[in-house]
Image (cartoon, rainbow, N blue to C red; front, side, top):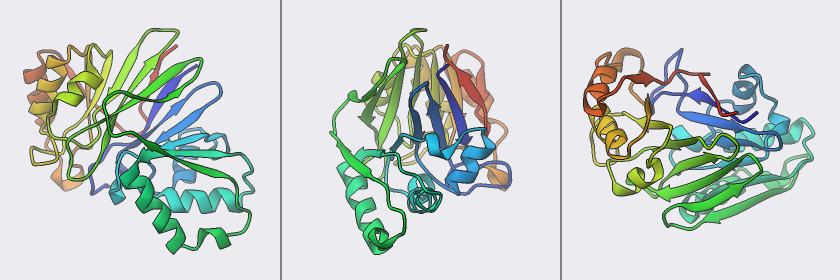
Length: 252
């Protein structure tokens, strides 16, 4: 049953075929959104998922290409008569700012409010965020411009592991997140203070002994570089794939 659906793959400037990077983890009892951009209700529907089933949101960091959809999602679900409780997780930095943003939007005056619980994640490596009968989710700080976490998901029945670097320059915490992962989804926005090149993504996958590497958060549209897959593959020593919007990974 558990699966991960990629809802967007672009870096900060999306195009017609690539939304900003975010994804959703579906289990029997939980539907976990990892970042929240664009129009989340529409995006989930296009993926064949129902927004009313959403149980949790992880905000990896407070940049608009990752969390700008949170207020719109909360308003929309309220208008659509949601009653179920929703958990929102993040480092204290992102949770604190998002609470202020919602106050600025005067969200307590919105009609049909439902219960939302914000939960601060400790700023340390491999923090257990959520555990169900099907999977365990862990977060670790990574190296971006602002406080940011990457994600490790361990699937209990299959024993499979998926890791997501989020936005980061190469850093040892990503290697720990991705250690022996069956799938590593790694950003490839380009080498900079807070990002990684495709080559660096390949090097990280190799050092972590990941089995498969998918590139995400890469430049799209006029800025897309068709050489990034080959560059990552040369560093990884194995074939590399490009993550695409609505790509699905099953973990039965």
